[in-house]
Amino acid sequence: MTGANPASRPQASRDEDLRAIHLRDQGFVTASRQGRHVENHLDDDHIGELIEQALSRADHARLGLVDRDDTNPGLNANP
Image (cartoon, rainbow, N blue to C red; front, side):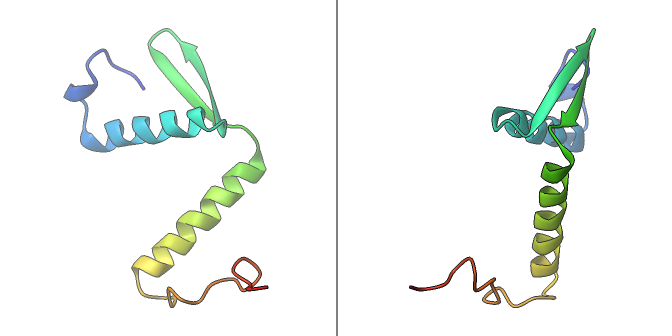
């Protein structure tokens, strides 16, 4: 998150900033500031692995490589 006027930055950079802010709000990311430069860091490697798995699953679903009804039965088991 650099720059005094976020509206003058490319949309992708602004979107990235908003995602980082949300992850910080949830406690998944910490931030350190050096002047106007903010560097975001994942809280731990496990969080990064979970995010990578979720993004991979979303990409596969978006590309039609998985059946959206094909879920983990352990997560949706009916008692």
